Each structure stands twice: as structure tokens, then as C-alpha cells.
Image (cartoon, rainbow, N blue to C red; front, side, top):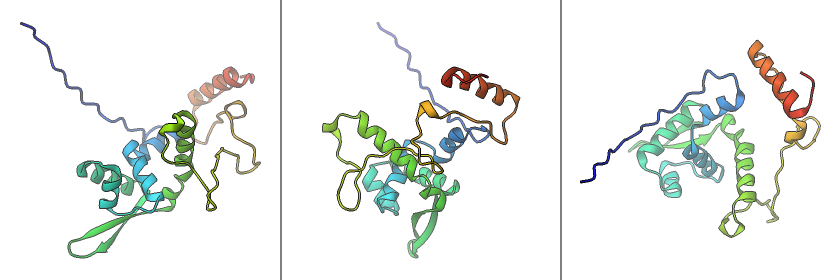
Length: 177
């Protein structure tokens, strides 16, 4: 006789809402991969529950939770478009539209690292030319790379954060701490 134990692990989502790191807070605001795909579809013109569900093939309860989270976080505004029965559409807010560069960075990264024969979509402009993206500094126009970018202390940085930044700069960029 063989006896095996079945162990179920339920992973509790960690909240980053108290973190002082913009990346951690952004992840907390967006949520998870379903939320990112919902935002992707919203940028492609989808706005209604049934449209998102058809596009993503996601379970209704998961989609409901993700749309509520994105609305609560201010990325979507929920607008009534039909009275009886009540039906809502989800419209990107300014905060939601500000997610576009993040989505394009993910899309570009995926396009570079997924085998070309597996790609159904590419980025293009209105004339049909393929786009190649890069992150640039809005003030200087310089490409942002790991080699020319480091963390700086923000207004909420405490001594521990400042020490961590100094160590990282010294190690990664060769700058004296």
C-alpha cells in the first residue's frame, strides 16, 4: 500500500501598499497578470465585461475581482451604459492611460525574448511600420539603461534606504559611497 499526503498551499497575496518603492507600489496598484492583460485589452478598445471575458477566457469571478481592483485603484472609471439590466463599461482614467509605457515595455521585452514564430502580434505605427521601443529620459532624450541609471533618495527615504542606495550605487555603478 502506498500512502501519499496531499498538501494544498494557499498563497496569500502580499500587499506592497506600505512600501516606499515606486515599483512595489505600482505592482500593488496594478495587481497581477490578469490585470495587466485587462489593461492591454482596454488600450485596444475593449471596455465591457463580456468583451474582456471573451478576449481573455478568464472566469467571471476572477474578472469581476480584477475589474473592481483596477477601478478601486483608479485605473478604470466604471460607467453605466445600459439601465435594465444594469451594465457597466470600464474606461481608462488618466492613471490607467499612464500605464501604457509599462505595457509597451512588457510587450517589447516579450517580442525580443519569445521565439519569433510564436509571436502573433508586433508593435506598429498608423502607417503599418513596425515599432521598436526604448525607454528615454523625458528631459534629455537619452536612452535609459542599467549602465547610466541609478536610484536616488526620494523624499520618504530614511537612513536605511539612503545607506542601501549608496551601497547599490557603489557596487553597480562604481560610484564612491
